[in-house]
Length: 80
Image (cartoon, rainbow, N blue to C red):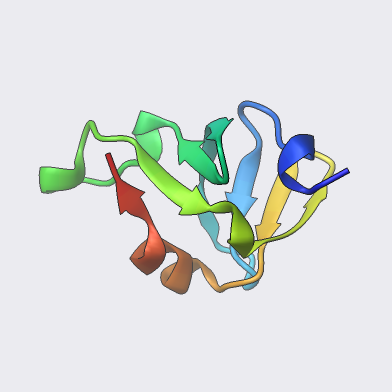
């Protein structure tokens, strides 16, 4: 079973450093779609952001841990 198939709605996404990155809205293809409340401020507000599924290190309990630190994951987010 792949890590992405274990990811469920409303799981917390944390970086390798333990920093909160976002909350799962759903998985779309090989990407994790974040809830809009985790979409940032200013011009980013109200847009969904995505994290590449390749950054998932493990899924444990109600948390998705990434292989990258939180600040790196934020920089790699895609906007839609």
